[in-house]
Length: 64
Image (cartoon, rainbow, N blue to C red):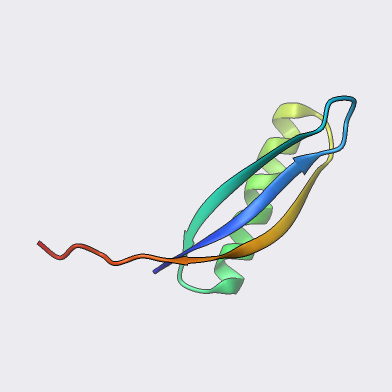
């Protein structure tokens, strides 16, 4: 599995930018999860939020 990095940002009075690493099997799975997170954040904060794909991070799984 890979970690897909997305940047979330608000463009309100005080702009806020943060990154989320989403663990997914593929790009489509990561996009669906990112949109779901965006909807949750929009409901909590009551302001529009933008999503931007930043990249992918590979990591090794420890079997032991």
